[in-house]
Length: 401
Image (tube, rainbow, N blue to C red; front, side, top):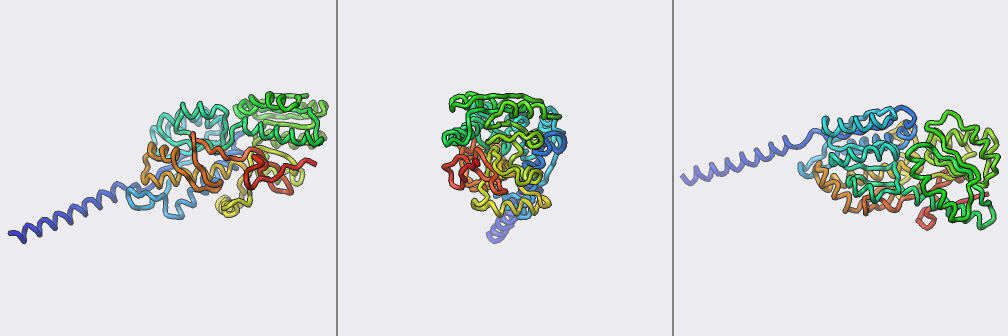
């Protein structure tokens, strides 16, 4: 009887372990469902299709080639399954489609849209459903206030006021050396991006002894800016500042050349760091300043550059928000794999408290932000280099001839 009991106990144990193994295998998802809604068409598509979407595709490709995300709860790698949706550059569409992804489709992870305006509009939806919002293409001076309201948002770019101060500091340095005067022409796009950046511009210029001799606010997307360019030229500024989005960044650059508007210093907005900007304007880009930047010689950057091209049919990353976007995805992946399952509350907590190795360096998201982002860059000898903060390793000195 004892032998029969022992045999029965062993059989029960084997059956129990088998049942646990079967249950574990059944619980393991076949895929991690990742979705995103962004501008695949419309006026915001140039930015989204250059910065956001290529990095999402690169990340998914790399994760799946490695076998998937490592979910230690199941002791296995689980591949990513992607849903990519076009909002046609319409914010109302974007919010509605995000709600569907989260509430109806119940995807595991949702990646953020492109741009400041769309990300701010999406924040309430991400927070309501508890999804981490990885914002590699947005900036706001209300960052701390917004994080309190929407604690699942994470910022990977500089604040607009930080970039404005860095830009004006470069101008003040050049003025002190006698290379420029104090006259400034200002172009502002009528868009949430322009509103965010313009709010601190005039006070910062005034405090540094600069005066605005021409100012214009123009609609987005613009149809023509030649009249504004001619008016700015007539004001004879030493510096032009354009708080512009990609379509107008290209338009202002082109129409300034056509109308012989060539101030000593030119700062433009989103689009200056795009490889297509250099491709269109060639050597004329040298000397032009823009937002953000990168250190092309930084650790892992060359490898990232080549992988980005390989996955995206030869397309280069932009020299600002591409690396920030990809770094955000690296943070997300490391947080998921440390948690070991798709538990979004735990993933958010890990992102808030952990330290992460990324292509943009080591990141710790104190207050839900990377406080060490590049502020300003400049085209020099055919490459776009970060020039501010000047004290950060890898920064190039600003050049004004």
